[in-house]
Image 1: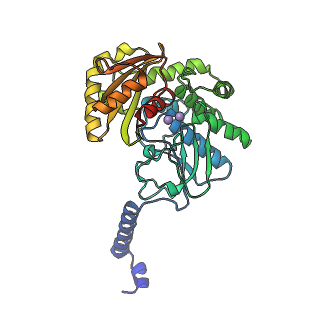
Image 2 (image 1 turned 180 degrees about the vertical axis):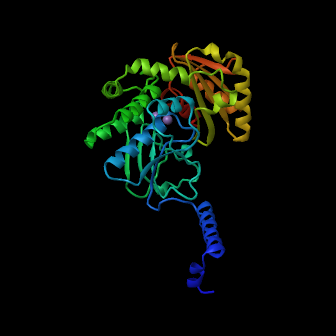
Image 3 (image 1 turned 90 degrees about the vertical axis):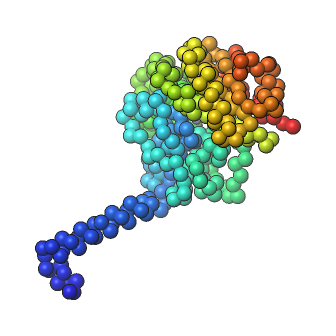
Length: 348
Ligand code: MN
Ligand code: MN
């Protein structure tokens, strides 16, 4: 049968061939990684928070507005409740979740992190073409010059807002809302010592575009974020957990913010249990879990770890571990008030 007669014959043959073709296409589509070769992925850290998700969205939107059509936002893990609340509030679709960079990620922009330990799995540093961040720079070594923007401000969202201004791109109500939410959550309503005067100014500007009272809106997000009643001990531990490696000591520091520490009392024992499990499975020297009371502005620092790590932890916070913890007033920020102290104490 010639192909000509095949298509002329009609009936079953054509139908069968057509069905076979569709099935073949479906198989190809489902097995081959489907993505544009030139796509530019903008992605925040693993265990994403409001800042890492919304700054990816807002920065991708800015790139799109500037003609970089291949830019798109992605998230490196499941969205937490407060992030969902913010995206739903501004009617923004949830970004694509990408947890493994094996097939994609040819061109990647990192937002809200530059530590490859916190980046999406299997991402090669050579594929990072830009960084926009507000964290310490630790070991980001790249053999080529790239756009690498970090500023000591409260949130990546505030840096992205400034990039809109610099590029004279108008900020929509939705994007203003996302960037404002990022600053409000990352700075815990400006209470965190990571807050810079510019954060306050930027939020004022963005809140005008959104048309909300930023304080009221921030408290609303905080209330969702700090609702621990429905969260398991594991969720609490993993919700905002980061791994570090200083002087050859691998460890993790998690944080949960609540409006009242008493909310966590019934879960304390099971949180410690999960910390021990995770320490063993990840082969960590220690895990510190910050139970942070944002209203009292203090943290109960839970500790599990080996004897050497316990010594470093006590040295870092100038106290004795009692009942698996050291309580510290005025400690709110992992980045500024916990990590540098541990880094120093771990130096041999
Ligand atoms: Mn973050
Ligand atoms: Mn951030």
